[in-house]
Length: 234
Image (cartoon, rainbow, N blue to C red):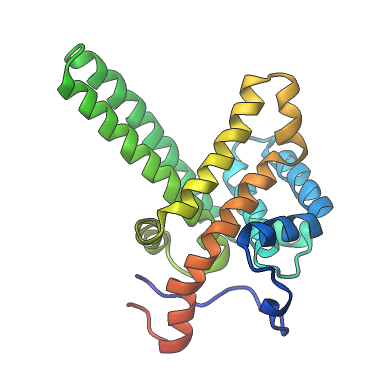
C-alpha cells in the first residue's frame, strides 16, 4: 500500500461526539445537512460537462466537493469545485481515458468470446470472466476518483491503492455500485421522466455515496499509517 497525507484540513472538534452509532444514519445525517449544496454541486457539474471533453475534470470537481461533505468537512461548492476541476484535471482525464479504453476492450472481448464458440461452457466462462473483471474495475474507480481528490499520489500509485482497498473491503464498494446502478436504471428505464433524478442530484448522490463508503478505508490504510510512520511505502 502506498501511503499519503490528507490534502484537506481536519476540523478541530471531535466529530465522534456528534456521530450516530450506525453508518446509514450518519450517511443520511450528512446528506441532509448538505442537501441544498449537493443539488447546487450537481447543477454545477452538469454545466461544466457541456463541452464533453471537460467531463473528467468536472468529475474531479464534483468529487472534491462530495468527499468533503462525506467527511463532514467544511466545503464551499463553487470554490472547492473549481479547485478540483483545475488542480487534478490531468489525473482525472488520464483515468477517464483508461476507463473508456477498458470499456471498448471489454465490449469487443465479450462480443468475440460470445460468438467464438456458440453455446459452449468455455465461451460462457470467458464472458463471465470479462464481466467480473469489468465489475472490479468500475468498483475500484470509486476509490480512484476519491483518492485523486484527497491525497498526493501519482495516478499509478492511486490505482494500485484502489485495487488493494477493494480487495480488503469490497462490501462498501458493492453498496456504492448498487446505488449508482439504481440511479442509472431509473434515469434510463423511466426516460424522459427519469432524467429528473440525475439532473437534480443524481450525479452528486453517486459521488457522495462513493466518497462516504471509500473514505474510511482510505483514511485507515493510506492516510493514518502515513501520519504515524511518515514513510512512503507500507
